[in-house]
Image (cartoon, rainbow, N blue to C red; front, side, top):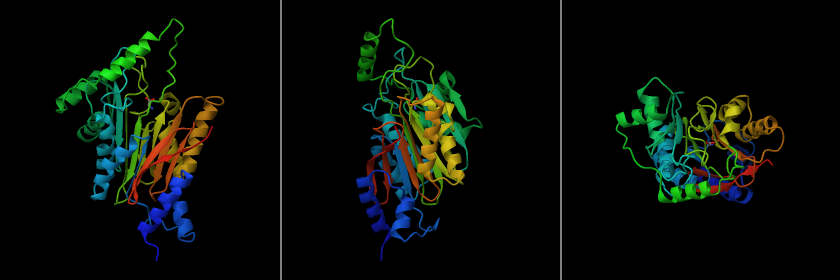
Amino acid sequence: MLTRRHFLKVSAALGAIGGFLPARSLLAGVLGGRSRPGADSRRPLVISTWKQGVAANEAAWNVLSGGGSALGAVEAGVMVPEADPEIMSVGYGGLPDEECRVTLDACIMGPDGNAGSVAFVQGYKHPISVARKVMEETDHVMIVGAGAAEFARKHGFPKEELLTEEARKRWLEWKASMSDRDDWLPPEEDHDTIGMVALDGSGDLAGACTTSGLAFKIHGRVGDSPIIGSGMYVDNEVGAAAATGRGEAVIKTCGSFLVVELMRQGLSPQKACKKALERIIKKSGGRPEFQVAYIAVNRDGEIGALSLQKGFQYALGEESGNRLMDSEYLL
Ligand code: GLY
């Protein structure tokens, strides 16, 4: 008899060979095409963006495997890269803006549809936890800038210097390389936001997204990551999605909301990610050179991950283990 543990191992092996392979397809293949949402749903599970997602998933998995909630898992998960100075696109150690200030964006959303967000916040290492406070302690959704920092201070978060020596050096190099021909377009550089979505053992979904945003951005620039429906979105009746990459393109297409709405219309998470990326291609009038990627999960634990350009990786954590996968890509 094929145990759940066994076929999850099969899925891990196939996934490692073939990149993305939807869990539901595997279930259908292994179990002879049976599709039975709920009972054989693949849960709990957690997906997050980029290599940094592996360590983040571990922390999330500690919550999920102990019977904890998806909401607790995604917060605990993304706090790991937020605190890691070697990850220069999130939290402490994130690359600063053009004025050499580290400004952070984050949002979180739970299965009850409640959401919290902070943007352009300075001096607080864990914007995701500040966003959760906004969600749970207020009837607001989004607090920005000095107001967000003041809100964090009043709720007991420690104020810290987030600019590391390495990030300061990178800023100096960037500054030294500027010329009068520079424009406001971003440098060719990954800005590896962490987005995370999780499905817990009770079948509830949650998501989180946190970033220092585009390196050397204009002071005050806010990307997609703190915007509910752009950087991340959850609908507990349908699924959850998160984005990484060029935030402006995601904002203009309400990216994560679009992925969830496409799943609501019956598309698999993978097909929903594809359609949402095709929308970006269409709106950008051709073949964009920037990167955008989506990760998604539906209520049955079927997953999706897709990027515009080659090179996107995502981490998938589930009962059979936690592994980094190369994403399929469109261009
Ligand atoms: N996706 C992160 C940003 O554009 O800021």
